[in-house]
Image (cartoon, rainbow, N blue to C red):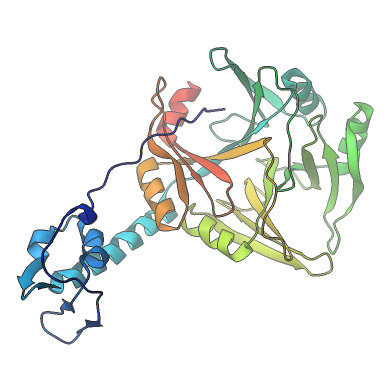
Length: 361
């Protein structure tokens, strides 16, 4: 697991520290048909900082007039520039080459979990790395190489043998060709089956649920051969519409489908960078009337590849996300990343695509 150290946010100049003479009042009118298109009697703090952030000098926009200030047509130009810049950033997100790289979570016994995933779920141990100075070990497992598949990154912290999964995390999804045979194997290995094989309620897909040694739930879905067997990460959210908008605009995912189940009082939305049958996707679940969940301390984050972590961070801010790690290279390995929280507090790390491939070398 990448240990993310907080960085100081970039310092932006603020007009709040500058003093001007004369009166200052809030904008009372916008004369859109006037040739100069003035904002009259504007409080400087409401108009100028936004212009400054797009490179326009306040000195060229302001003129003193009888103890008050007016902002010329450049104000409107700045607002147009702001809108255009935001539109450009969000349009870039849609064109960015993004892929879900891995999901990170903590386990209490690394060898035990590796044994379960390889013997019962058919995964391969791709690599391990031990960081003794930080007192943790990572293991990467999956159904194919990391440069082309979505994989699991397990984290074992020295001396910690148990974590709280909480109520917010849902499950991981794995596509298998025969759910019943997979369940039989898991039972033979001493695994825990929490839902026997059978058709999903209201549908035809055969599924089953199991738990790994740490209590993480896995949904087994019966499907034909697929290039991406590790196919889902299900998380619960408090406002589904808000979450969908954020994942579409900030993360550049596509809404693949939604399904409402009023009988059981929940709605799901599937989002991702490709079809469910061939790609890993996010399954966001909204339970009627539940707006907050306990996240525990077991599940960590998802990593997503991007061509530019700096533009990614800008888009996340525009969409109301919280940046928890400013974009830039990690000390020691120089891989550029940025980290953020979505509106429900779920963490995501974006990793530079080129740097990620260099790490794998």
